[in-house]
Length: 169
Length: 104
Image (cartoon, rainbow over all chains, first blue to last red; front, side, top):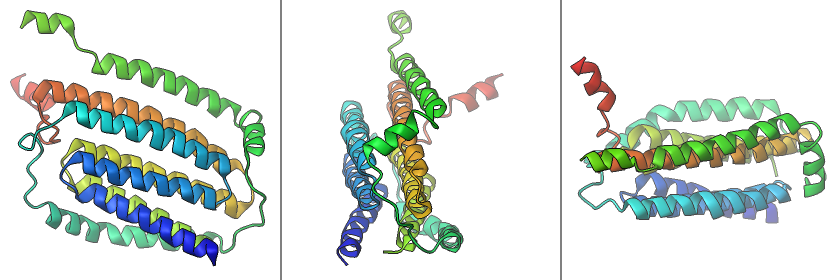
């Protein structure tokens, strides 16, 4: 019962946050909705007995990704007139929601056919996760580390000001 | 507690992400919708990890958090680059490739 009520509260937070994210005109308010949604996801991970993932979610998604998104939004600081003009926004959202809803139903139905019950599993703590990560999943782990490094270099190269071109102008 | 509730939540979040990508033109909202779709998939992975009784799904979800971080860094850099060029965060404003094709 406690689990169900926790789930309901977190699910309400996540759905409300994500709907607020796609409805708001100002990107900063969308980022707040995204923040609420990511916090709810961390709670969901905790509810699913993955302590370490809940912590990692809060640290990486909330602490790093959302904060960097907000910083970028504030740095770009697009004025009201620079924001895209979307007169039929709600109409488009409702139309595409109607189009997507059969897909949602299909995903839900096909996933519920797979498994009906949770297995009796002990908590996935840091120790279990670490031993799996460094034995069976060590190659994907290394690939992700190379990916992060290359993404960092790529982000610096893309976002850098091209000095020579600015001077020519 | 049944896993159906988590399946429902994950598919709803994924669909909200699709709706955001399709119907909005603000690049930041598109970016956050893509992140939301990825997060819905990681929620699904953790749910399956608990359903199957192994920790493998949780490990994949942890690796996915790294992939999401890499995607966020690149996407934000691209947004900054595009904004510097055309002073707009409208996804309809970027037609540089099309114009070059027409000139040639």
